[in-house]
Image (cartoon, helix red, strand yellow):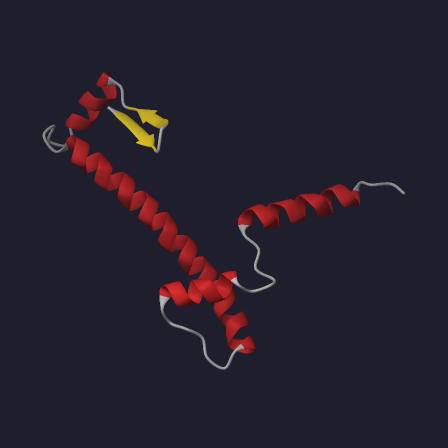
Length: 106
């Protein structure tokens, strides 16, 4: 059994691993069970990231605006439109730049 994301092979369950899994899951439901677990893992990651964004940004937004949207899309649109919002890539690059600057001798 192969697991793909778009066209990238993420994982291939070997015949031996499949037999191991069949000890816990009926083989007729194994494929669906794996799909359900992957979907749950991805959705859980998304929800965790959303909750982290809310914890980080709601106090900031309440100081900036008289009212803050409660809908998920509207709240995310507001957070992502903030001039000081930084995604993880930007945070890591800023930290890396600061680290590099510490070692620069003028």
